Image (cartoon, rainbow, N blue to C red; front, side, top):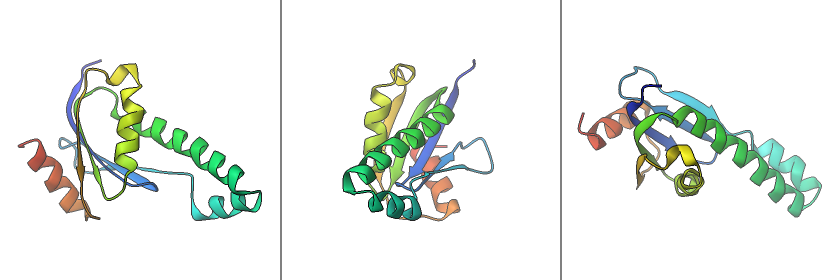
Length: 124
C-alpha cells in the first residue's frame, strides 16, 4: 500500500474531520457517545456511564485510526483534550510507530479555516 503524505485531524469528543490536502472535502467521523446515550447510561449509574463512555471512545478512536493509517505525517488539532488522548491511543498502535505526529490547540473553526490551517502547517 502506497503511503499518503499529510493528514490533518481536527477533533473534539463528538466528531473528527480528517483533512487530506489532496482532497477537496474532509471526511467526518462522529462519536456514538451522544448526550442521549450519556443520559441513558447515567440512569444506570455513574460507573456504568463512565464505562459506556470509555467503550464508545475506543470505537471512535479506532474508526479515526483506521482512516489515518497509511499517512506519513499527521497533525492533530482542535479545542479539547481529545487530540491528546487520541495521540496517546496512536502511540500504542504499531502501525503508527513511524508516523510523524504534531499536536496543536485551536478554537472551533470553519471548514475553510481547517483546510487553510492544515495547508499552512505542512507548508503546502
